[in-house]
Length: 125
Image 1 (spheres, rainbow, N blue to C red):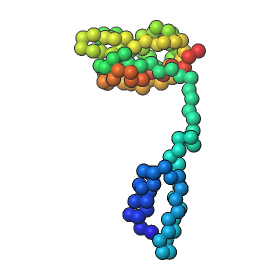
Image 2: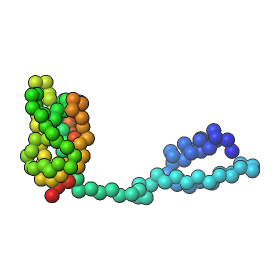
Image 3: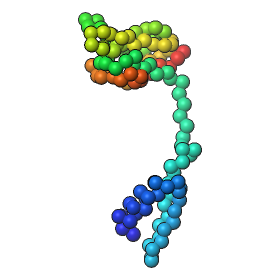
Image 4: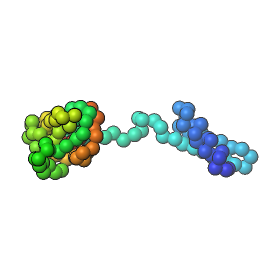
């Protein structure tokens, strides 16, 4: 069986709800199995809470002239300012919603952000 035929069969199968097909032509025979069923996928759960961007803008770890030495693994408190989103000449604070450990920093200083984008992940204590 040539690659073109195999590719066509695979692409066609992905457009159907079939999970398995056996195809034969002359001496060629092939069985294909696809696992597109979400019931078979692994479940993932986490107790980490995302800290979302309050608006679109440019992310800053600190206000101009200030420093913020925030690192992954640091303890954070409810209401602690983790960074800011610069919108024009305004700065909107990004704050921790609970006490815990800062597990993931998913943004870099000076990068554009969108409203609701996860910027940090905190593991509550």
